[in-house]
Length: 342
Image (cartoon, rainbow, N blue to C red; front, top):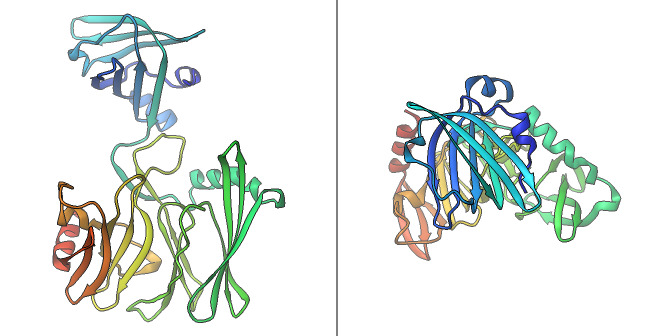
C-alpha cells in the first residue's frame, strides 16, 4: 500500500526524469533524480514510481526523459489512487491525470554498490535499538552451543518476535567461551545462517575467529588480544530509510597463509552459490574489495550454476563449478582487483 506521506514529506518539484518504462502489463515506471535542495535536506537523491494498471493512461511520451517535475499530486480513493503529474518540457508544461490500482515508490541515496561500513553509524544503531526490545525472556526462542577449536565454544540464545509467521524482530546473544569461561560476547541481528565455527592463523602470527553480526558482512576477533573489527557494507542501492542494501552473504571462509589471499563462499539472496576472493592483509582493517570467481569462470552465467570452494593449490584457487574442478590463477584475481580500484 502506497504511503501518501511520501508526497507530503519530500519535494519532487524540479526533479529530473532520468528514465521511463512501460511494462507489458501496462504499468508505467518513472525514474528520477531529486532537486539538490531536497537531496541536501533529506539525503535522498533518486526516486522511483511504478503506477499499477493506470486508466485511462496507456503510455507517456518518450521525450519525457530529461524533463523536470512540475507537480506530483496523489489522492487516495476507495479503490486505488487518483494521480496528476505535470512535467516541464522544452515546449512548455504537459500534464496527465489517471487512476491506478496501486503505487510503488522507492527513494534512494545512491546508485550501484557502496562499501561504506555501516557498523557503529547512527543508522545502524537506530536499526539495532528498534529490535532490542526482543531481548526479553518472553521472546526467548532457543539456545544452541557450537564446538570451536582449542576448547572454545560458541553459545547462542535466540530471541524473536513472530506474529502470524512473520518475524517482526530477531536478535541473538552470542558468547565465546574458553574452557567454559566467557571471553567475548556480541549481539547479532541475524538468525538465518549457521555461525562460522573455525579459527585460522594469519601470516601476522595472530589467531582469528571470524563471525557475523548481521546477514551481510564479516567480523574478526583476534583471539590473543580480543581486539575486534566489524564490517557491514552499505550494499547495493536500496530504500533510503533502511541501513543495508543487498550484498554477498558469507557462509564459509578459507584463508591461504602462503599467498595472503582469502576466499568466501556464499551467495546473494535467491542466487546461485559463488566464491568471492581478495587480498587479506589485515583482519582488523578489513578491505572489502573482492572478485567473483563466477565472473572469471563463466562471465555470462551460461555454463554453470553453483561455484564452490575446493582448495588452494599453489598460485591457484580450485573451485567446483557444478561439481567440476576448475582452477583460477591468483594473478588473475589480483589483476582484476587492481583494475577495479583504479
